Amino acid sequence: MSRTTDTRRSPPDALLLMQPGCAHCPHVLNALASLLEQGVIARLKAVNVMEYPEAAREVGTRSVPWTRIGDFVLPGNYTETELKHWARESTREDGVAHYYFDLLDNGHIARAMARIQENPVEVHDLLGLLAGEEVPMSVRIGVSAIVEELAGHEALVGALDRIKALTGAPSPATRADAAHFLALTGAVEARPVIRKLLHDEEAQVREVAGEALEILGHPDIM
Image (cartoon, rainbow, N blue to C red; front, top):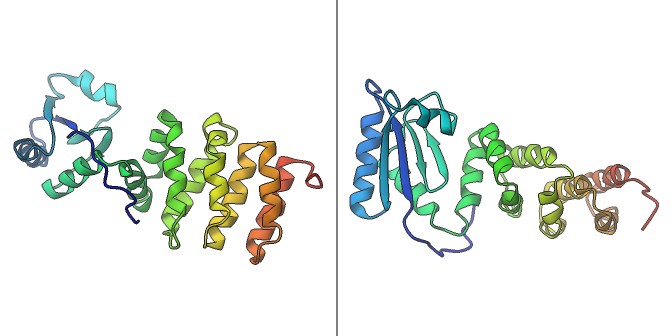
C-alpha cells in the first residue's frame, strides 16, 4: 500500500516475553538489543515467563517469543530487519494502517479483530485500506469481516464520512463494500448516499446498494 505521510514520533519501547529452552528467544533478544543500541527502540524489557508467568497471562499468550514494539504485537520468530521495520512503523502516522494491512494480508483476521475490539476508533485506519485501486482479496475480506462485527457500533457511525468517501473509489468492489458498510452504520443520513449508488455504472454496485437500502428500511424514502 502507498505511504501517505512520513511524520515520526519518538522511538518506541519494546517488551519481550521469553523462557529457557526456547530456540528462537535468544535470536529475538539479540535483535532487540541491537535495535536498542542503534536507538531504534528507546527501552527494552525482557521477561522470563517461567519465573513471571503472570506476564504471559496479562497479554494473553501461551507461546514465546512474544514481542510488543510500541503497541504492535509480534508473536513468533522475527528477524532484526523485521523488528526494525515495525519499530519504525510504530512511529509513523500511518503505521497502524500498515499493521492492519500486514495482519489481514497474512490471514490473521482474528488478531486484527481482537485489536479493533480494544481500539474501535481504528476502524478509520482499517477502512483506509480499501481506498487504493488494487486491494488484495485477503485484505478486502478481512476488512469486511471486521466491519460487519462492528455493525451499529458508535465507532462505525463515527466513521461515516470515511465510508462515504469510499463510494467514489475507482474500484467497483470498494464502492459496493461502501454501500454495505453504510447500511451497517444504521445511520439515516447514509440513505441518500446509498441511493446515488443505485445509478452506478456497475451492476454489482447497484445490486448491493439496493440491498443496503433494504437493510436500512424504507427504501422508497429519499
